[in-house]
Image (cartoon, rainbow, N blue to C red; front, side, top):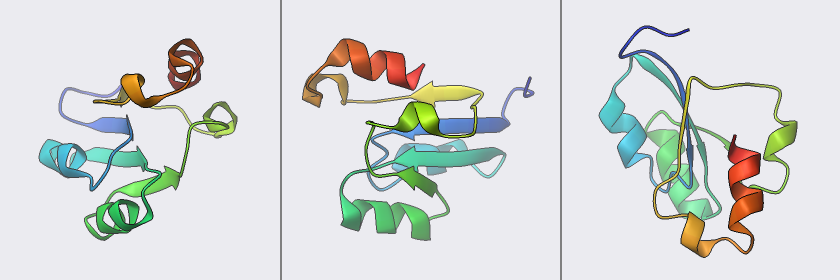
Length: 87
């Protein structure tokens, strides 16, 4: 278990990584982003973009201390599936 203010966090739909970068360098910051230009921007800002979409996220060989997804659920075709994938 991570101590408060550190650990790993995954942002599903991280866009340019603004939220993740707000957390600071104490966190290992990971993102999922479908928009290629936004993903490149996030990577340059220190976010590890690990996927371009959610279809195979359950196959990723890692776990996270925290998972967030802002303004995403209303854009996915099957919200229940999306939430299961993210958990």
